[in-house]
Length: 240
Image 1 (cartoon, rainbow, N blue to C red):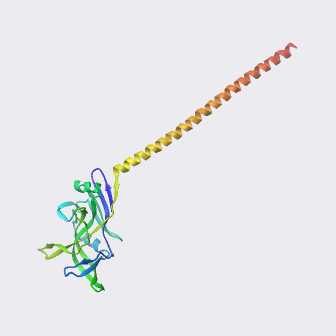
Image 2 (cartoon, rainbow, N blue to C red):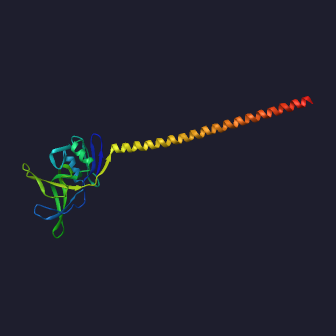
């Protein structure tokens, strides 16, 4: 899970759930133990047929953080699983992100089609082949995202049940302000180094000019001495 802190928002990027991977052991309505796998493309089909999928805080419909229709929530399935990229401007979530109090992803769904197979005595595997993805949720420190199989919401008008699945994540927090300060600090060091190098080059250049000037002065003095010697010699010869 990648958490990117910005001045006006927090960007959350991570996997809500994996595909083709056994869940933790859960109990169904009959109290029977089972593990669950989401088949490939199930999430993608659910996303495509649902006009709007909300992002909630702790499955609370009174705490809507955005949706696919609003444009601040992007959902898609890849070869790993259901990935969510959410730009959240909610002040509470932003503060919890800064304090590292976001604990995981979760999602609510209505099961439409399943296939079961026995694994061993007292344990079966359920394959989810079709679902209606109703929402995804960001889970904070008040509600740990355990992988549960119980239905927690009944829709009387359709006589259907909504199930929740959740898992914890390990957050990688990126602070834009700290990153900017770090880059500025590095930039300052580089500038200082470059300035130091320029100073050394200038110092060498000035030293070279000084050496050249000294050589020129010595050459002029030597030439003056030679000129005086030549003049003396000429005068001596002429006088002879």
